[in-house]
Image (cartoon, rainbow, N blue to C red; front, side, top):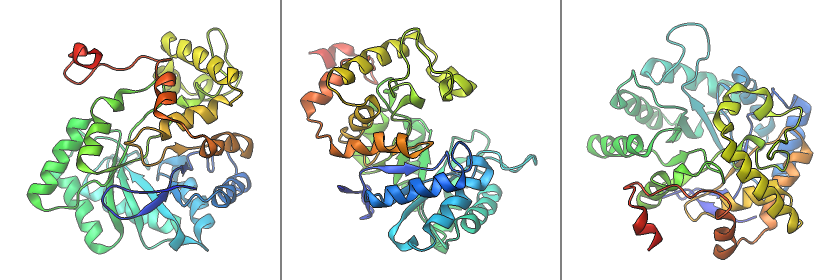
Length: 324
């Protein structure tokens, strides 16, 4: 296992992070614990969850898993999504953050969270309010570092500026969506992370299963997130995405590599990426992603795979500067 440093924190994490969104949902407790043990056998010390995953059950199962090895684990969880019917049981207000961090600590059976993510952008709460609350939690030792997921680059940059001006704890880890069919992060988020020395752990390296080899033009499995979940159907429903999946699957099969393995390895090979977040419903799916650890993807190989999809235009939209 290769270990990488998260930004400027000095924390060493495995080059794959295991995401536990399936815990308590698509994976029962027994299966979840088996996958956790397999990850540890592979050398993974980095685990990601969220309070909203199975409404807290994911945190509970992960908490039981790490009970006897907590000090060896780098742990993340998140806050933002609704955790009840009450109008205030959501968002990034100081009130909600302070309540939810205590609930997460209890479910995870720990006294601190290594990286605490704001899960989405809250348009109703001033950034200063959110950042001050996170800074207070760091001062109290309940979180070690604030982190951010699903924010645009301009929002992250604004928050970094506020944190610097007000001398507050800044975001040290970013969690964007990133895979071969969703490459928007390459335009500004990944360059921002490299410039400011912030860690990056992208989610959905398989595109919700689109790049797992099961999908193509006119080809879909009977089960899967892209079939059963409206959010994923909307996210990846563009026919162009299925064209990319078709080309990518053929490319992987010609080289006798499982598409899921190659998809994870491609994300891992981006120099700005600290560790892709892999997930699984069962041990079989997990093994395909873990196999990415054995692939040595050269810059030339990465470029070849990248050509199978559309490279997003640069932030200035001056495409000629990229082509020259």
